[in-house]
Length: 162
Image (cartoon, rainbow, N blue to C red; front, side, top):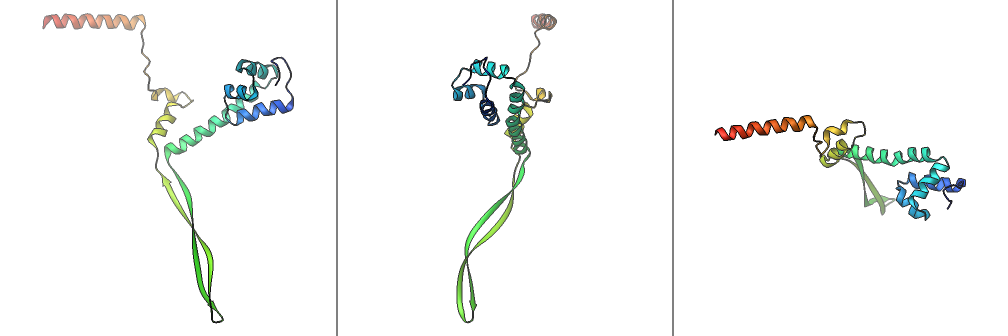
């Protein structure tokens, strides 16, 4: 493969882009190509394909996000059942047995999955996911600590009165 300051051939560019489209990470691609990850980053910047790669990386992410949303809200799917049967009949006084297949289509519903719904809500990219985070961000500014100190003083005074 190329050195960081070397132009890539069209074949090499297409290979790198195809690997990103497959959903491979930078580390995985670097390992496949046989170079350090930093060199891969430099190669992409030098050859002007960073923007293409960035847009390519979003395709697998969007596909997973869409699948996660569908799983979170439930979905219908068709299940096709094939059954071997024998048709029996007669023609000109001769009994016939003919093998055949009976195909039945059944529509089934997969109920919404709360785990998928939770994950989808927590990882939304539009800023709405903040409301669903597991982690709570605490405010430890001087003002907050001052108010907390005052509150603890009041608690101690109340406790001493009792």
